[in-house]
Image (cartoon, rainbow, N blue to C red):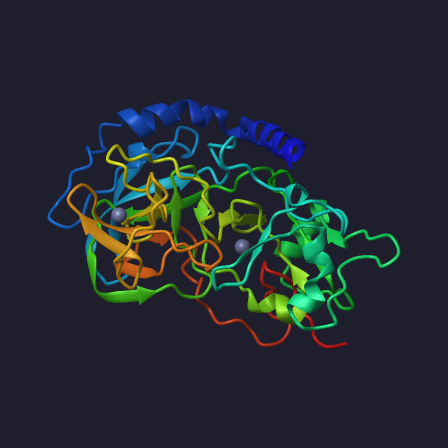
Length: 359
Ligand SMILES: [Zn+2]
Ligand SMILES: [Zn+2]
């Protein structure tokens, strides 16, 4: 993992090259932009504070625009464009994903999750034991003679991760689409309310809708389509940060595995990770002493005097960053049709792996 991480970091730095003209503005836009008010707390809702984003996490200037939230409330939103790659690559490195052989160590591979709170190290042993784990002898993701794991990677990996068509006859592969193959982070523009507006009732996280933005410039994704792996015998492996990439969404987190915890809190409260789409902040699961926060509500949130209402990340492996939305949602630009139903046959393939018809 070590050399791969360094490799990834180098590539990330290289990949940032084309946006360097913007990144030099980030200090200004993040820290000095006069249109950004200093975060102030209201009775219950702390205002969003764009200056908390790491330098290089956002592209261009943060602006304030009129917007209509999911509940119909007309208010003002911050328009923030995230870089789409971790601005803290030393602590939140991308990759690795697929282990090369069935004897590879955990350092050479990423992670997978069961949706119930278990995070698996995707090492050689994990690949070897897939049939046992899922009680399905169709799993055979490596060459029996050589022990080599069947991996689709490079440009082809991204093509498969992003191509909606099924691949006839293709089965049992470990899929990886590294950031360098998609030219680095994909910029995503989000509108989040400058001050969160409580919704009438909690809203569940639906479909393929991205759920927020991390302070390190990475997208907070929706739950990963884990059920896909059981039917397609393929793995859209996550890295140790619980993230992976595809050409449409770019690099995104599915699980809060301890990365992007960049907003250190002076009072020992859990570090901040980012903002949910409703503008409420998302904090790490555990506080400075690694004590898990108790007494959270159904969305994983709580209120305190310093931060107002906020979420705490769900356990790694639960396949969600937080449980549901307590506020009215803002929106990602160009994602209004995120919740469209999928065609039953030959429909868009999930990034988690292709949908395969039985052969
Ligand atoms: Zn994903
Ligand atoms: Zn808290």
